[in-house]
Amino acid sequence: MKQITNIVLSGVGGQGILLASKLVSEAALLEGYDVKANEVHGMAQRGGSVIGQIRFGKKVFSPLVKLGSAHILLAMEIIESIRYAPYLSPTGLALVNTQRVIPTTVSSGQAEYPADPEGLVKQTFPRFQMADCLAIAKEAGDTRCTNTVMVGWLSNHLPFSAESWQKVLEQCIKPKFISMNLKAFALGRKIS
Figure (cartoon, rainbow, N blue to C red):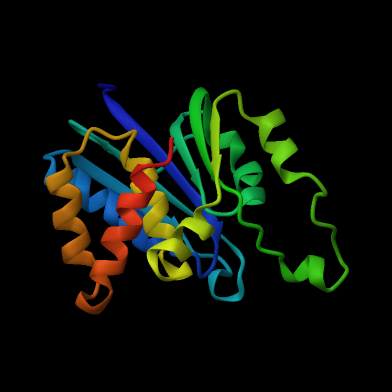
């Protein structure tokens, strides 16, 4: 395993970046790693860009992921993957949800949403996977579980046990939503 693993999560306000970040951080802690994390909320409540950074390893001194050093970029919105592409290392992996969230600058006519975001992803990232995590969350029972689907997908690329993930989900998710989120996580793990 790498000395320190760097993960960047990106999306827009309301997509559950903060919960996803907490799930990953808590799983790393349960596995005995030193963990540092931070989130930049920005205009999150208004659908603005949100980024989370997680670093774990034997000893971590800073929560900040340097440009070009992320091992994994988990993007909950397709254009947000492009916005935060500079964080990913040349050999890093981008896990990209194909969901499109149209920002107010586009809906107000001040900007244009790219015509072919999937094409941009293919041009931008040497290593990437794309999936419609919103549709998978719907299958799990609620589109609000998209973040949990994505954490399940991410879990395939992290050295954490199934037991740690189960425990973290049960600790961090409200009891009335746990069954649906466990299903969402399991469906996310099936993404290849």
